[in-house]
Structure formats: C-alpha cells, structure tokens
Image (cartoon, rainbow, N blue to C red; front, side, top):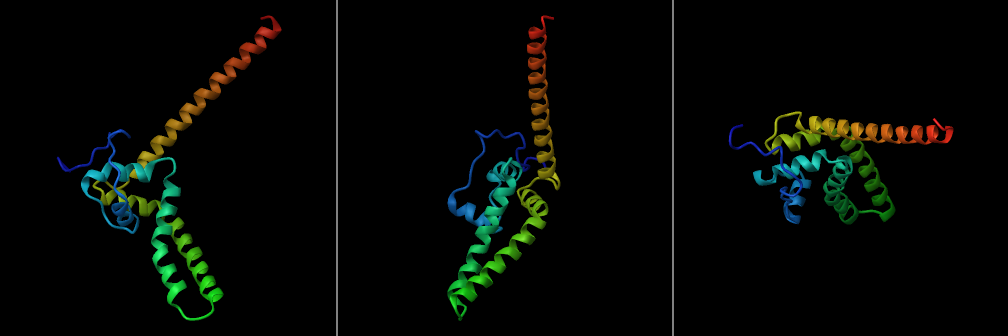
Length: 152
C-alpha cells in the first residue's frame, strides 16, 4: 500500500466523521470512501468499540424486525416474540463474531489484517501502564504519610 494507504497516526482532531447517511450505509455493512479510513480505525479500536458494534448490529436488525412486526400476519404478541427471538439470536452471533467483523471493516478501509486488534492491545497496554503508575504514586503517597506519622 503505497500512497493509497490510510493514515495510522491521525489525531482525533484530524479524523473526519461520516455524515448520517454514510454512517447508516457503514452500519449496514457498506464501505466508506478512503478519507474516512482513520475514523473507521478509531471506530473499531476506541474504548467503546464493543458498544459501537452492538449499536451497528441493532441498526442492521431494524429493517427485518420492522418488516416482521408490520407484514407477518398473526397476533401482535406472536410477531413480537418472533422478533425478540430474532434479536437475541442475531445479537448472539454478532457478539460471537465481533472481533472478526471489526477486523473486516478495518481491512475494507485499507488497513492490513490484524490492525484493529493490534491497536486495541496497544491502547489497553497504555491504559494498564497509566493505571500502574497511578497506583504506584498513590502507594508512595500513603507510605510517605505513614512515615510522617511515625516520625521517620
């Protein structure tokens, strides 16, 4: 990927978000133009990536569930239970293949396979390092208070 490769070092200020219609297309499984590639990587690697995935799954389910509720003959409670069962089954599969689905989105945006997981792992390591530093500093403050109370 020469000049066509997406920018990995894009900052949140430079990331261009898609408009509502393009986001709906993206949520339904469509691809976005190359200029949105940094946003796709951000969308699939940010701290809330799993919630975003579930939201996209609900958007995908909205059309078939709406059709079942409106067009299938029978009592509404039967249609509602069928829709609810469909939602549970679809969410089960959506959650089971969540990492593969997000990797596919990132790959479609022009990044190499495995990029999303690598970025999530890197972010988790940075968070763990910051938390470790915070705890270490808190422990040092407690130790200093203890030594001060003991007169040492």
